[in-house]
Image 1 (spheres, rainbow, N blue to C red):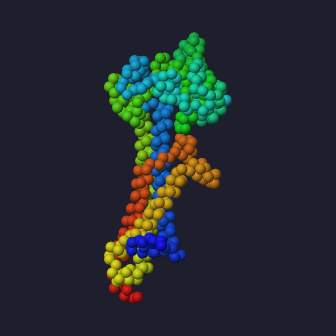
Image 2: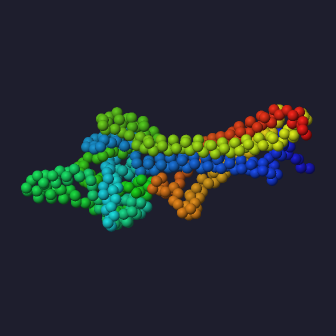
Image 3: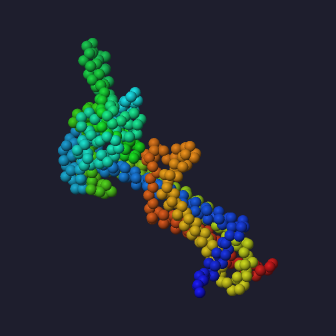
Length: 431
């Protein structure tokens, strides 16, 4: 003979009350469960996407930029500083760079991207830029350049194309020469010098890179260091020195060691310092979204409360009979409290499953919604990522699920208390 599973008295009665009977009360119960499911799933999706956005942004920044940058507008004695930096504890490698905006022209199109002047051999030890190459090769020998994928698309560049760059770095010198030409009768020499300064540089595109971050792919041209120095008239000076550390997360300790021998205004700053406002904004937004979306669960909890209050009123006679037969206050309390807990449990469970499923297929859902409503969701030009990043953190999911379940349980406590305190004599007086 098969053994029947016996349930506790309180759970048995609670499940009987929750059993669908095609009544308005059952519809309210269903809506309450759907509210919990919606709240939990939306919370999991939003928090996972915000966490993934922050983590992916960190990986992209560290991949394209160095953990530490030594900067001071213009560094003339960079070779001495480079030698001291490489001997500092925690430093793996260091490389000089220059960076500044130029006017880039190709096929009649003009933009003003950054040029990043690097020494390929040294830079390869600091940041692995070669991993981002999607077309051509990472070759910066001679008058060549490597262009971001979105910038190349806008300018109509391919591997082997030529791009002309005009640098604003010597604009003051050009103005000075033109003023001298106005002030002298024999101005031919000054005009020729100004024209030589205006002459553009023509570079051949040897490669196209795609880092996955729109800010880099649409706004950067990588050039040899000497070309960047010529464009900005730096001579042998550089704008900064990038430093690779053994662990990017512990870059602060290395920064402090470097600042001990650097003389102000020369200073070392970490990748966290350079992007502090961005990461702070993401954390604040993630926290704010958690509290705002928590109100969806709270509203669902109020729906559970209203359902149980209605149940209490409808089951007044049954409560009176149970108490007359000897049911204790705690048992009546647990009957109605269990209803809220059961609704909260199944709502949280379904919300967890649907939330994780939507996180896994987030990009497919975005494409479907974009095609259906003919709008661009999560544009790369705004969020700097071609796909929606997401990372499910078990701790965050656990906090969301516990919060949802506790909210539903607390909502059930008030009607359960009033049901337990009901006087059986008053409940059965008119029966």
